[in-house]
Image (cartoon, rainbow over all chains, first blue to last red; front, side):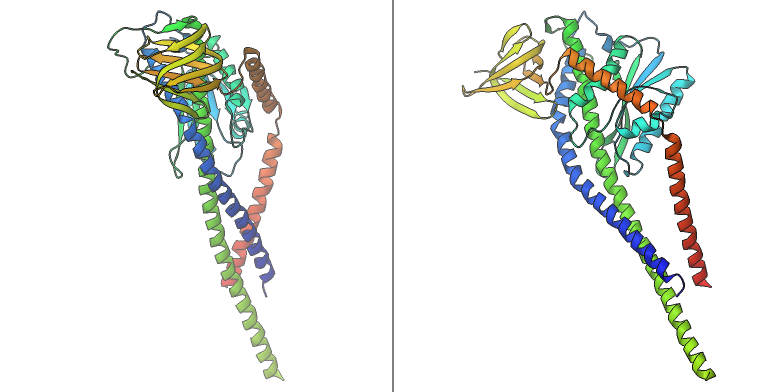
Length: 287
Length: 140
């Protein structure tokens, strides 16, 4: 029986692979709900923060915070990249990085250098090979990222911006649209993009306590932190969704492969039986 | 009695929203009582209580460990911090992030990773080839 045993072993091995992909698919399916809940729970903060920032942008303050002023010359740009810690999630990270690489090339062609901080194992593994300056990194955020895990990397970038080492800061992450769709997104964090509705009906300003500089500094830092945090949660939900889909198609492929292999095995068995019978018949005729 | 809308949120969840007749919080410069139609104001909060006087005269208390209070004539927003925050703590976190990056760069295992991936690829190709041959031999 030609290769019967080998095919059997192969079938076993594909079956084992399918078991693993099935399990991963189901784990992701349950985790995605939790990630979505987290994402939803943190949305009110982000929304109110954006609203407050909108108000601040519209207030007629004499003081202009450096985060709100566009710089005339750009010598260096910063990126905050949110990626996953683990792989096996389809093209999620790859698409994001490819998207970003295009931008980095464009900057480098103009003679602008790039600094970056990486959130998640995949980004830091990927970008350490490239000729970019990685100034900060945080990995292993787990299933429930906390904002204090992110403070460090954000502060690195905010300090660089305040000191004038970078002139622009952007945030790169996968936006969770729905389970089937995740969108690679690049948002500008600093300087604050000008808001659409700048025409206020009358001129007013806040009472700042104690003074505009320190209050705005505090608020804008919190604003950037909240955006990065929100992006991390979106990315987490995207990760589970992408993994679920990738593992589902892997399981389907495994099922197909098992079908084909079983067919080959049966044919081989049939051929062996036919051969044996004809040998017996041949043998009997000879006697 | 006139009321003002009040939202209290932290980065991780929504804590309160509804109409109240007064908000009392501990600002950096001292206690603040915000009644409806207060002038626009923005301030940092010190760790402490936020007290809400509800429409029906009841009071509700929340503890915040810091944050931002924003007052608009029709709405009061409290953006509460969840994490313990202090300048030196932030500094330590920033240093840790930098160290992590340096470690990631120093830790070059590229050659190993590539070798490993190539080995896996070779194995997969061999399996594929074997399968292909098997299929061909069966057809004949």
